[in-house]
Every structure is written in C-alpha cells, then in structure tokens.
Image (tube, rainbow, N blue to C red; front, side, top):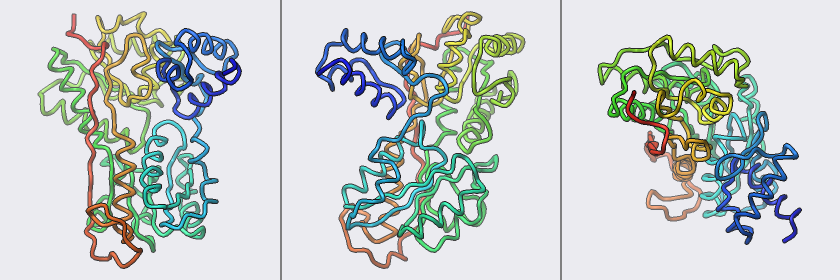
Length: 375
C-alpha cells in the first residue's frame, strides 16, 4: 500500500472513532508500527490529526464523523425488516458508539436505520422526530437534548408519540416513567465508583468538573454527591461547570492555571473530570505543570475515548456505549413485535402486551496510571 493510501486510511479511522491506536492501525493496514508512526507524524505536520501517546486523535475543534454507513444516507437502503428512527443530540464523540450498536443489531434482523441529529437544539427535536415518522419509521429511539437536574427528560412530546418509543441514555420522570421504556448508562453509579476508588486511596477532598447541564452531566454530578454523602466526605468545592471556565470548551494555559489555582485554594487532591476530552485538553494545556499527576493530583476521566492515549494514561469511567445501543434497539424491536424476548425473529405484529422496561447499564472503572495515594 502506498503511503498516501495508508495515510488516507489512518485519517478515515481517526475521523470515525475520534482516536486510533498505532497497534490497531498496523494490524489493519499490514504495516509496521514504525511506518504507522511516520504516517501519523506526516498527518500531524499537516494539521489533520494530533499525535498522542500510542496513536492519533482529531485536532482540537474538529468533530468526529459518523462512518459513512451510519450517515442519514442509510435511509436509502431497501431493507425488508423494521424501519427504526433515531434522534441523537450529536453525531460525533459519545453517540457514535451507541449508533454503531444500534446498527449492528438492526443488521441482524434486516432492519433499516433513519438518523436525525439535533445538535443539542431542543427546539428542533419535535420537527426532526416527525420527519422520521414521515419517512416511515415504525419505532423510535430518542435521546432528547434536555433534562432536569434529577435526570428526567423535559420534553413531554417524547413520551406521547404514536409509535413504540425507547429512550436512549435518558429516562422519563414522574408519571411518564410508568409508560416509557428506556436504556441508559448508570452514569451516577460510574461517578460514585470513581469517588469510592479515590477515597480508598486516601483522598478526601475530591473535586468535580462537568461539561454543562446535559443529562449525563446531571447524573455524574448526582453520583459524585451521593458518594460524598455515603462516605461522609466533605465537599471540597462546588462542581465546576464548563460555563465557569473562560473560553471553554477550549482549554488554554491560562484557564488550566486558573483551575489549578482554584483546586489548590480548596485543598483538592483528586479530580473527576467529565469528559475525558476535557481531561486530555487540560493535560495538554499544562495542568500537570502545576499538579504532577498522579503525585500531587489524582485524575479520573469520565468516559474512555481518549484516556488510554494520554501521558500518563488516565484511570477512566467507561460507559458500555455499544451495549446500550444494542439493548435499546432490542427493546424497541420487541415492542414492535419484530423480536421475541428470547431474541428470535418474528413478524411485525401487535406487541401491546410487552411490559415497559427500564435498563441501567453499569459503566466500568478502568484503572490506569493517573491515581495514587495523596502526598
């Protein structure tokens, strides 16, 4: 394979997943790891990727792309199986793995996926969903952008649609919970597991950074607070939100130094950072200059897209995103009568007797090199 072809394949892999490992690329492309590293250096020099320990990631500000086969063009397929519409807030980063899980499961039954992306614009969501219905969706997988601090969605229309519907990485609150199925990551449990791990190492003043007022951020904040209550830990400082950081979502040396000063002033020895994209940006903006990691500060990332590729590799909470997608579409297919609870294929029919299900998928805590006992 010519160098230009290899580099095109490497760039495509990084754009699909947001990150690519040297070892995986070498195996897939039939080249040595030395050759792959040189290709990554070439792409990095052109500004098309950014080199990290063990691989490459997208440059700052770039958005990950859905693989071509996951794009809305998939709607052009003439599959004979059930047609499923899916609304996600973003096609890049977190939801790519979920959509891949949905697609893999649908392929098993000859189904077809229609995808709509809200870009976190709640005002567009109802129109996008009705567009999916007009395009022939027999059932819906929905991840609305907004939620209340307790984690329930705040869009009433999402629980009163004319076709079977399953929430993905969301849940309904109040009376709607009794009639609405969902499959979600138990982010609150993942955050609590991170706090317990840090406490077991001897940390008591554990800070939290969250990206904003997203459903995931609310759950992470809730788990962090619940673990503090459970363990009798003091709240070292209120959770830090992205909106509190000048210039965020970009991290600069100045904003990293300001965060370090806040952590120092509050006696913090450990930080849970949502997401690992922010943790990586913080490290590259000089946080470790003020806080040697893991010596002076132990750092746990929430999410595990980039954590393995940092220096040091970050301990991370890793949601099972692909599994969430698989379980969500299986739940929907059962509600459509296209799949039995035992996984056997069936004809579309009346599945009104199917019970409402609430599935919480537990994230894993992946231990790496960014945590130690406090000095």
